[in-house]
Length: 322
Length: 315
Image 1 (spheres, rainbow over the protein chains, first blue to last red):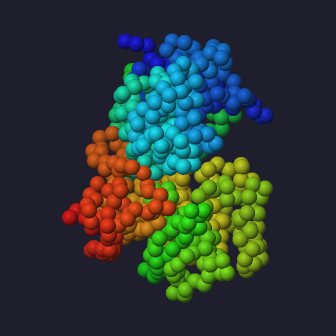
Image 2: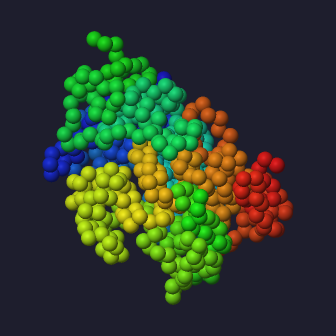
């Protein structure tokens, strides 16, 4: 079996602030196997964005990598020089961002931008154009020849996101990172994009790391899921295991809160009481303890570790009592 | 249930360099006290423009709006002039709609100052409003940037309801919120609606939210309502093919769910070139020759469910 495309081990990242270090990620482990779609679920402030910025090495200047490694096909990205890293981005690792309007250049035509991203290729201008047309066809854009002459503002949101996907897949990357690519789109277009991504993933055989807080989209697309809370991975496993039989109290609550899972219409929607812990002053013990209805004395003192074979969760309740 | 706002054949037209676009194209709607009416539709379908027209923020091109049985006048620039004390608007971006240099106390006291209404003690009112939306007194002296997304929404709710309006127009009240906080904001709105007998017009594209909180719903496509009626009825039996596709497209978080999704082909047509006949025929899986040439009349089925389609679902 091939080594995983991405293997993150023990990654911790702090942000230096005026009032001390903010511990945005703590001991995060994540594996993206070849040809799989891995979803990261979590609410705002759980560290999703910090994690992907760390993978593509575009962290804010005040971020500090405490420890850990981010191995891409066996090579630690954290030890690469900026030049080496640059040669990977857009070639072996590419990204689709949340807002397609801001990730495309508004003053250049689609065609120019699509040729520009092929700057590594030695092929002729006509070949680059032909390849652009072919990619637009594959993401389902009608009449690609004409579209190449248009500017981003001529296109609708769904079309722009498809152009962004075409550009990201242009170099046939081994890993595609998609950061909430459908949040700005409506339900019908969201479904179009998800189906397209799934088809393209099969065609190209790449791996996808898909970030979203929309549980329905994750369920529709991903093979495996990683649940993050306040900078830690609290549960991971196959989609079915995690969504049908969640082990961690946070995952259970999160799934319960989704109005889509509540069959009977109700005016009293469930909520998770309390708020996120202060990442400047981390509480002792389990990170979710203050909002957990099942917490015991042990949860206040001892931090639970991920346990389990494939379906892992970090909760004391899952361990046999000592 | 008493009707508080009646909208008949409302039109909003924007002039653009190549002519004009009808962003809201003949919309009729009733909003009842104590009820929530949801408007759903894709971006660009005219939802937000409709809300802005009802608040008098953009000129209207045609149609009538009655508030409590009385027809609203238009100002010199053709904008409706509703009593701003009685029609409140909650904007889509809660942080963007708060002045970054104003404390929450000042922002919440502002409606009283502007409308010079009775209260002798705007500060006290601000604290009362904070308590109403479940925020402590310590929030009064914070600035907007010190609030989380959910807290900023609560402040938005407090400010909109400060003068006890009859109608609240909420534009995407839960956009950008996590599911756990989304529930808090919706529960808060439902509770206050009960207490104040408020009519809520909610604009959203989150169908899961609509299913739980809306009594009535309308589906908007290219500036028209293509289907409207009781929301439970529409969810259980959509008649217009677009409604059916929209409802089926809602991704389910249950991995065992049968997908049965109707995938619509193509994109939303441009408002500059409205398709002939039924405007949905370019994407409709059921379209036939007749749909391309003539516009279907409004059909009313049992239970006042209304739709425009020659070949409705379930027939």
